[in-house]
Amino acid sequence: MKSSIISKLNFTKTQFIGTSLLLLSALLTSANQVYYANRVQNVNPFVFTFISFLISALFFFIISSDKGKYPTLNKVVLSDLVKLNVSSAFAFMGFYYALKFIEPAIVSALEMGVGPFFAIILGRFVYRKEETASHWEWFIAIGTFVASLMLIWAVITGKTGIQNISYPLMLNGIIASLVCGIGAVYLQFTPKN
Image (cartoon, rainbow, N blue to C red; front, side):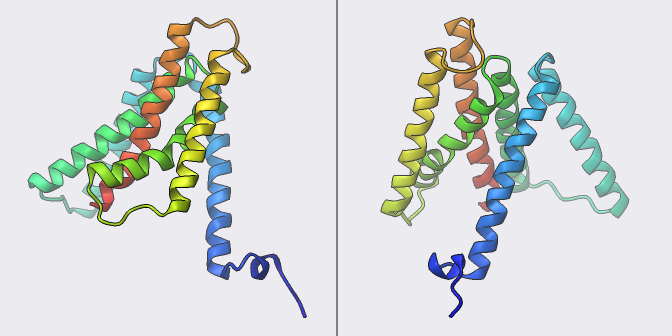
């Protein structure tokens, strides 16, 4: 009788592959953010975000003009477009701005750590979703949020790699990380509506 990790954990093969891909995505995202931090730390985050959005807009304009199809901009489409761009701007500017003041691993961890908590709050109170989060989802969300609070405490007490930074600048970095996390969660909700 052959037993495997998948059967012991009571996962289906699809769930195991999906979970593995999510884990790989999280690892690659973290590595990517640390790489970006080293490259853009000395660049104004607003300029960098503007240039990134401009390049993205040009790219998608070229792609859409090649197909000859242009979407019609009614109020709903325009509203969704504005929501996507504003939430993207908050996520990216928050991330790049936070990198100026606190280390990349902390920025990424805060961004990802507050995500589940803000997702439940946003879904429940802003979008008035009928289904509520399960007890386990709340447990995970609160656990990751508490872990994020511990990271914030580590930053405030100077227990991270970046030392000798003033408290107002440190607070700017923490707030920017939280704004980044909220923007990322809102960005995930926007296309679904």
